[in-house]
Length: 225
Image (cartoon, rainbow, N blue to C red; front, side, top):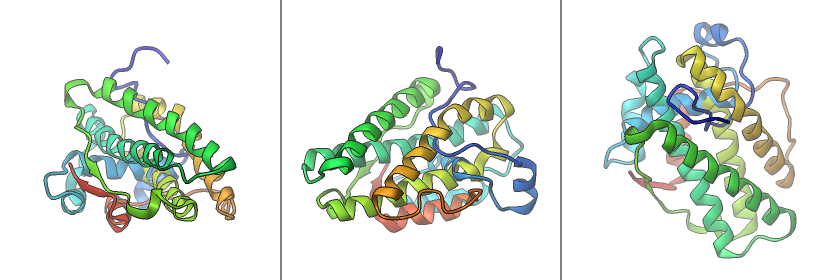
């Protein structure tokens, strides 16, 4: 992958994005990757208010034309999501309640998410936000609860990135595409493990920053920044 920089950022999640122009005009994001990115800009504005702060700042955070400054905001929200996922899988493995293929899934994806965090921090440099505090409750202490939460987190990541594709500069969008397919595989894998269809649609939609952040808030995992 070469030396990371703000433009060559690839540590985001989702699936390949198409029809960005249509997404912008129709307000129906393209795929998982855009959604996370829209949420990303909001996360850049998180304050001590935690998830509530994310929702409060999301409405106007990405109103500007794509720019390197906006790329940084989006990448910082992506970093929050990667922090969240990395911490979730790490804690689930520490709890020792996962077995068989579910544990194998957690081990593989935990490595991926840690790599995404490391890459994003290097790409953002001094502007990378610090790791928030999380509380996963019973979601990491029981295999069934773990699968339910993992399905939510992975699919939220997909729609989040899809919702932000049109808000990135072309170089940043092209670089992000290197990771989105991997994140889409995470979502398909865990959905299958949870007994759900791994690919229920011919195309993934995206969500707005407010919608993504509302989902994150509903999990109660994000405690503070």
